Length: 221
Image (cartoon, rainbow, N blue to C red; front, side, top):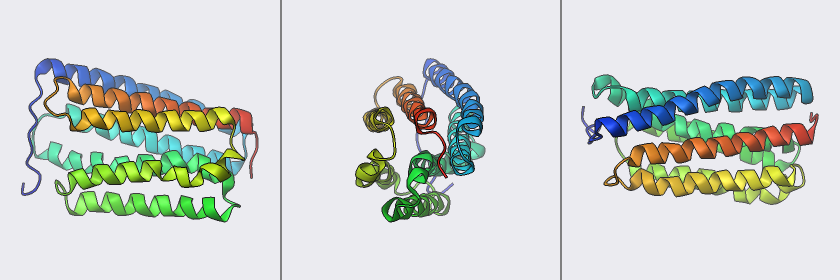
């Protein structure tokens, strides 16, 4: 397939390690999403529940697609899954922002950012489907820019979210960013498994941030 040919030179041990990391991530995401929605249903309003549901769906979708793509044998199907995998990263970023920005939908800056982050995610996902295998390095930059765009909303969010949530959001962003080093370090053995280990750790940190905001924040319309 034009534009979708790339090396996939991982040995058996590397594939097993990556499969284990993905398996753990998907199981934790499924269990965590159910628990989070149940928690929101008890502790929070309908708006928070909806935002948390979007986050949970995005988390499970992204990790599930990543697992399918990375464990699938090299074939035409794998290259198609690659499109979904790269597009789902944009969705995960926007979905992760949703439960935090929803807390400030009455604030113009936060409401605008919630809309903007989803517009950017849709545009990024479309790019991955329409031009697969192209601009991959640019896409990494876009992921990072979207992820760290939250700095612009830090001040208004700080007054609406508990301090522990803000710290966990920051820690998760740092983990994702450090993980990118291993994502592009293709000559390193177990590079893919290490990268995905950072992804799972960062996702777990942001999950903790969402949970902390629900428990500490209480109802929010």
